Amino acid sequence: MKTQQWTIYVGLNDSDTHEQKLLTEKYVSLLKKVCYNYQVAFSVSFINGGYFHADGSYVEENTLALMLMDVEESKVDDIASDLCAFFNQESVMVTKTPAQIKFISDSLKEQ
Image 1: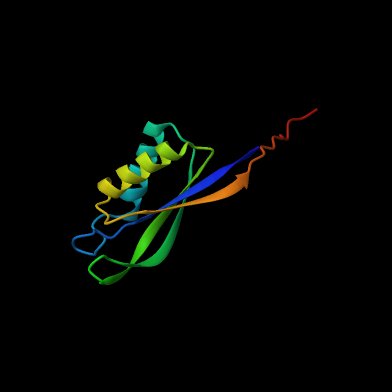
Image 2: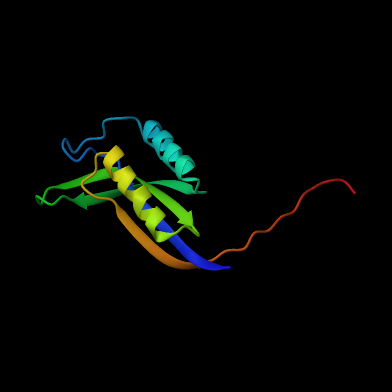
C-alpha cells in the first residue's frame, strides 16, 4: 500500500530556559499518551540534534523522532501542535516522505 511517512521531531529542551527540565522517560510517556489519545500507531526514536532559536541562540538537545504511517495530515498537524505546546517548544519539525507499507505475519507454531 502506498502512503506517507510522517516524522515529528520534538526537542526536549524548554524553549524559555534552553535546558531539559524532565527526564527523557517522562517526555516519552507523555508522547505515548498523546498518540494513544489520537489512536495512531507510532514508533519513536531518541536522537540528538541542534537548533537555532528565533533569537539566534543555538542549543544542542535530546530529541524524540515520532514516526507515523498512513495518518491524515490534519491529524499529524494536531499531534505536532499538541507536542509543541506540552513540551514547551518554540517549534517542532514535521517531515513527510512517500512510503510503501506491507505487513508480514508468521509464527513458530508446531504443526
